[in-house]
Image 1 (cartoon, rainbow, N blue to C red):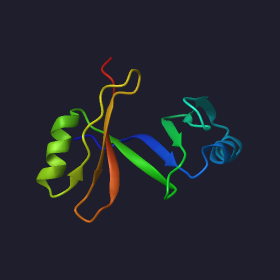
Image 2: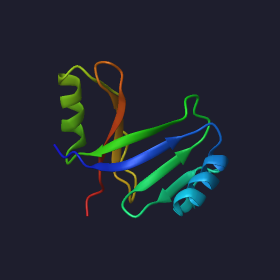
Image 3: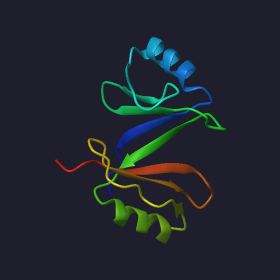
Length: 114
């Protein structure tokens, strides 16, 4: 199973405030999607999503896996839990939120097929 970080998601109470902060801090270019200041940043190496209305502001890390369904099965086999995997999103791939047996949250991300 691959172990590279492939995507980060920033959950915040107010996406617009966090957008300005990270744009100014790191110089990341922002790509709006939807409303309320949500969207994603392009960093030199990966995309970083941004969404608001998160009750617990956090960074949510996604790891690259070559086969999402096999990785989901392995998480469950090892005692972890998973949400239902998302559908394939153009230019993004598929993802699934998970947690280890103690509740540590992380995600699995299958990149789009070229």
